[in-house]
Image 1 (cartoon, rainbow, N blue to C red):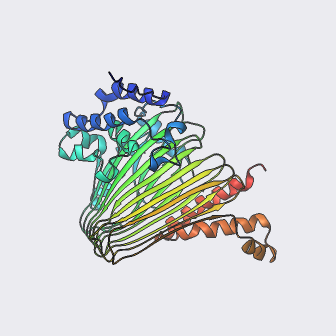
Image 2 (cartoon, rainbow, N blue to C red):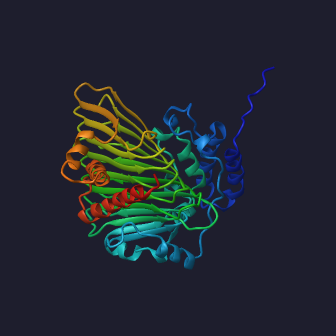
Image 3 (tube, one colour):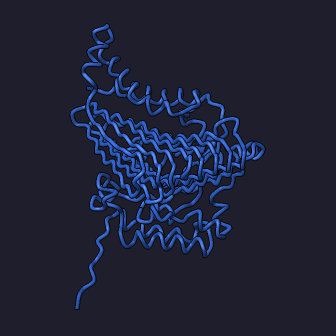
Length: 450
């Protein structure tokens, strides 16, 4: 008789199993949503947290990094939520925009601009409302696409998803100002937030979307957020994902992007916060005349760990893709870039290129790059590359020889290095705000003890 192998769970894994059993009756959704949740969590029961023997998580061993599983965050009372939003530093202060506000993973209509958005041609519903209806749209909202079927972080999000927003920008609508989906964390006991957002940009519509995450220092929050984005034919979308959470936060974030033919999406991820963060993107391009730009500007120091992982599937021909990832890594921080572009047999005339560059600002900084191409078509233009190195001594000497102090010269070169990614933002007011985030990080770096 052969004994069945016994699964040894970590403390965090055991806690997640117990939490799911405890909170399942209170999660929104009926039988259909419940069956999707149960199937997703069964996957976690079998496999546990991803670890370094899982190829996609080789450089981000979540089983080792996640020591404890925080309890799910309860919905704050409205007055406390409003105070948190008011008192937490706003990295986009001064920019006129529509807002949809989530505090500790819960949507607050009273703090949001749903009525104004409705007048502008945008329909908004909370994820909790959608899941509570328990129909086909509800079960699809928490479903995981086939290309991400093995991702345990997405499975956990599907199992625990509590709230978020569903946004539909109607066909042909052009938003007159950016729309921010604002995620704010409160102070207090460490909690976890599982958020599911969905944004549909109708055919011919145009919008600038900003997805922001911010919170207090010293609070070991755990955020698991998934945002599904569907860009219709001829839609034009500028998307900025800004993560400036507290220095003790663990942040897992995924974007699921599907593009129609002739859609244009330019997506920028800016990372400066969290102790451990992973930003994933799963993309299905739209074929003929679809244009995809993915950009990243990462700034980490201390003992931060930041991972950006991409999977881009060209299933149809004629699409254009560019990936440019820039990362500045200081102190004992560890950065990761993993990017894979797949060109399917029918995706002739694909034009896809990917480049990851990292600037190592200390002898102990570390960066792992793993760009990949899988090409099954023969009439394509594809390429990838990766570089890592310190600040160029020749450029540094050039500035210092003209009287620029070394610290200022380093700062100018780091700003110029990251600016290539931020230049992808067409809204100059927003680009200026993002450059201010870079400046704030550099000032903090400059004031750090030697």
